Amino acid sequence: MALDKEFLEILACPVCRGVFEWRERDGKEELRCESCHRCYPIEEGIPVLLPDAGVVREG
Image 1 (cartoon, helix red, strand yellow):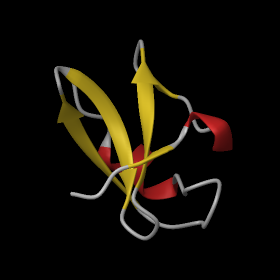
Image 2 (image 1 turned 60 degrees about the vertical axis):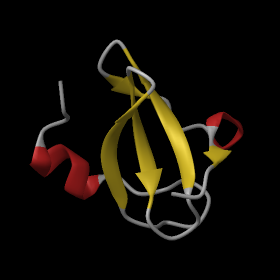
Image 3 (image 1 turned 180 degrees about the horizontal axis):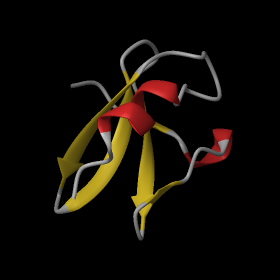
Image 4 (image 1 turned 120 degrees about the horizontal axis):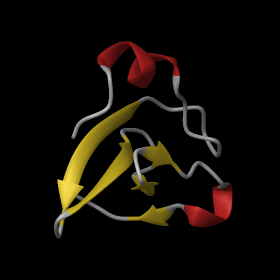
């Protein structure tokens, strides 16, 4: 279940304020910052946007 496009447009990375892209990885949803490449989990449809929750992943 992808996030609503309008909702995704208002979110920003809590570390660098970059733009997010939604993606699915290993069967789990996450938001990936296009600038710093941090990935934040989406749990039960809710993005976990705590700086410590972000994991840097290339690609």
